[in-house]
Amino acid sequence: MMTNLFSMFDPSSSINNLPLNWLSNMLGIMIIPSSMWLIPSRNYIMWNKIILNLHKEFKMLIGYKTINKGSTFLFISLLSMIMFNNFMGLFPYIFTSTSHLLMSLTLALPLWLSFMLFGWINNTQYMFMHLVPQGTPSMLMPFMVCIETISNFIRPGTLAVRLAANMIAGHLLMTLMGNTGPHLTMMLMSLLIMTQILLLILESAVAIIQSYVFAVLSTLYSSEAN
Image 1: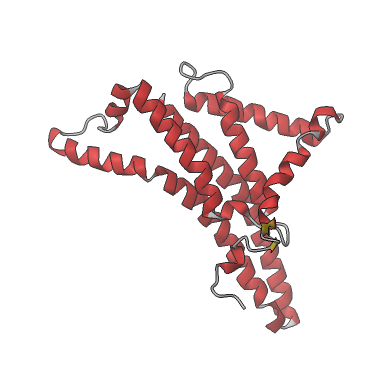
Image 2: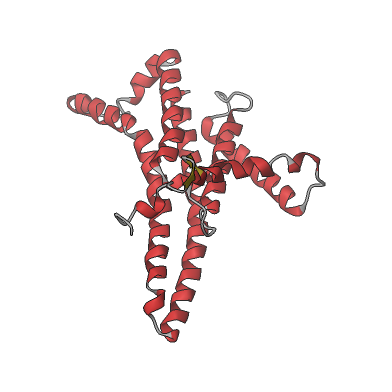
């Protein structure tokens, strides 16, 4: 019996204290080496084109003048990993690691901390300029500094909570609707199955959108530090 509604999302499946649910994070690493020696398929060529377009977009967001070679691949890899884990959670009996704050906060906090340290050490004057938006009246400047400082500190939390909450919300809704299935008539059961299929399509879109949002916001935070 569940202790609470969210306990179904805890990584509790284990053998000899080994958390097996987190193994879904490693499945993507098993797929990557095959692309190095197999003949490229249409799916692989399409994925390469998507990566090339993402590289151009992240390059534009960071800035052509301040960008270092290979810096966009950090965000492309981040997007790919989050999207892969989001899609893995749509399969039955596979734990969605990105719906857990332990995973999302581990991704967001080191990125934000590295951007802040790089910005304040190398571009101190530029970072101070970010605390006061252009055109702010003199009387409001102390308040704007406090507001901007607080908004900078809560950035990793908002990144992590946004990803985890969006991933857990759809799964929770699908679980609640699925639990009502045994008590419905055949007519309502067919309606429930159609609704579940539509929710599955919606969750597939959310899996892509949330990984893209996480990567784009990380790119924008890095552009401020540069």
